[in-house]
Image (cartoon, rainbow, N blue to C red; front, side, top):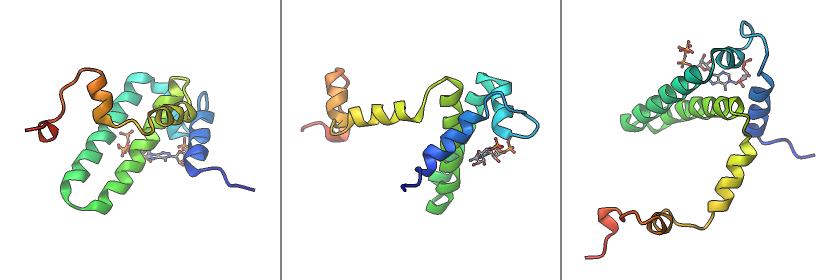
Length: 116
Ligand SMILES: N=c1c2ncn([C@@H]3O[C@H](COP(=O)(O)OP(=O)(O)OP(=O)(O)O)[C@@H](O)[C@H]3O)c2ncn1[C@@H]1O[C@H](COP(=O)(O)O)[C@@H](O)[C@H]1O
């Protein structure tokens, strides 16, 4: 039988921590502290990912990306959303270039892509 995707497995674990004992689960402690703390941690992890990205050590991005994904999952679960909803949004966007999508919104193309 197919193993569940590790990201699906992690999301199920994260979601199952809602209402769990904050002293025995870091995830539960984030839920207990509420949306501002969850959002703050997500922001910190995003900044740490940016710092890793600029350090020139490509492997250093991996653990920061893992922290970022984990904290994003905590936010989704706190909002009562699921990974499947994000997956569906990405599927909906499949094949639509970011340039085309932006042009449809009336946004300017980046300088480097403008015709001479
Ligand atoms: N993937 C993760 C994961 N990634 C990061 N973290 C935690 O996120 C925190 C990141 O915060 P920082 O790096 O800022 O470290 P910190 O200073 O200790 O954190 P704060 O005190 O500022 O909150 C650390 O405590 C990490 O251990 C994670 N905690 C849990 N998981 C997964 O979630 C599952 C459930 O965990 P519990 O809810 O703790 O049982 C685990 O089995 C893992 O699979």
